[in-house]
Each structure stands twice: as structure tokens, then as C-alpha cells.
Image 1 (spheres, helix red, strand yellow):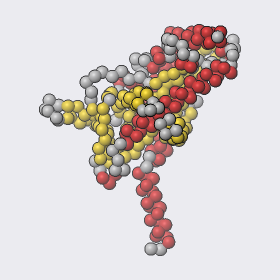
Image 2 (cartoon, rainbow, N blue to C red):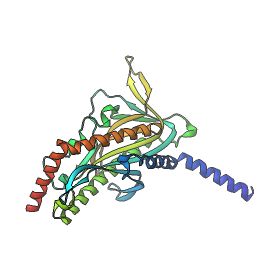
Image 3 (tube, rainbow, N blue to C red):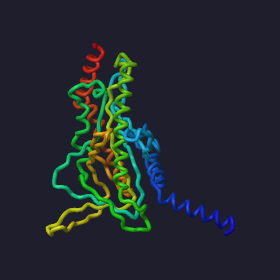
Image 4 (spheres, rainbow, N blue to C red):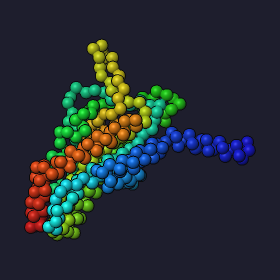
Length: 308
């Protein structure tokens, strides 16, 4: 074989390997997110590709495909002046999977599931009770209320030519998101504690913000919801493009549960629009009694902390 033909063969093989990997999907989503900055509520959104986290099971640093951080503001007062202050951050932690030859099947469960995001604030590092930031996570109109919910799933190979020959891709993705979310919770609480110790006067630095986490798997493949029929052992299968999976992870280093959005690639734009609607809901909550009560508790907790 000539050198030119060998080179072409290598390029073709590399193109195929890249196509089968998740990188094109990550780049595609990055482009969608960059375009979304035109929305006035997203102009300060920060998108990080390849965000790192610490895996406490292996004591190693690992990579998350994407982290999106969106500040949410409210009208408040700082240094005696009316300002638009950051009261909350909404972080999307995204893991991409491109396996067009595989199908993810989610099984409809009889029990009712109430899905909420992970949530933290300065009240966690001050160990203040009650921690009213949880009220933001339980707002009834967030997108979780309109999504199919389940706890059971399985993965199958449909096309041998378009699969990576694995049936644990979904499990790998949700474990990655679980560990990345736990890392973000830990580092957020530590960062807030450091800020409290650095800024003695709360009026000079609004440390009492809330942080919500939306873990998301974006899947380029087939998705179905399975529901048993009246016939014994038979299941009805319906194509879906979005489901919320409850996942409970326990290991030597973790004990955490998450509600994870599983979104098909074609539905990601629509899903992100629901995130924007959530931002509008959270903005209103920061302005009304939910936000007022939270800020009052932050003030009381800080006063007690500084009095020690």
C-alpha cells in the first residue's frame, strides 16, 4: 500500500472513531448553548467543556463533559444602594452519550415520584435549621412536574454496526453525574464557608446565595418507556425523548440520591427552553416570600455564627 493510501486509510478510520465518540455531540451542544446567550436571562451564562471533579472512590480527578452555570438575580440592596444581586446559581451538569445502535428502556413504576434538584446554600455550611433554601427546589412549577419519572431502566443493543458493544453506558453516565454533583456540592459549601470567614460584614458581600444542580444525560440513541399490559409478561413500548430517573448511589465514599434528566439529542433544545422557564420561576421566588424568608434566615444564621 502506498503512503498516500495508508494515510487516507488512517484518516478515514479516525473519522469513524470520532463519529462514534461523544465529542461531536458535545461540540454540537456547546454551539446550542452559545447561541442561547442571546436570551436576556442567559447573557451571563458560563459554559465549561470538560469540567473536572474528584472521584472519591478512586481518589482520581475525572472529567465531566459540560458544566453550565447560570446566575439568577433579584432586586436587593448592597452598600445602601438598590441593585440587581445574584441570589442563586442554576448549574447544569451534562454528560453526553452517542450510541445510535443502542436503546435505553425505562420502566413505568407504580409508585409516585416527586422529583427535585439537589440544592445547597450558605445555610448548609452554617449547619442552620431549618434550611429554607430547600423551598426553591420544591417549587411546584419547575419542569420536573411535567416529565415522566422512573427508577428502573435497562439498555439493549439494536444495531451491531452502530454500537460500542456495551450495555452499561447509561449506568456509567449517571454514576459520573452523581459523583460530579457530589463534588460540586462539597466545593460550593467549602467556598461559601471561606467567603464567610473572609468577609465579616454580610452587607458588603452577598454570600447567602442558593445553588441548584440539574444533572442531565444527553443521549444520541433510542429511548422507550415500557409499561406492562394485561397479558402476563407482556410490555407496551412507547418512544420517548425525555424522562427523569431517580438514582440512589451508595459506595465506600458516597451516599447520595439524584433526580437525573435523560434527554434525547433531538429534544435538547426543547428541554433547555424548559430550563429558561425554570429560571423565570426561580427569579419570582427570589422576589417573593420564599426569597425573603431565605435571606432572613441567612442573616440570623450569620449573626449567630459571628457571635460565637
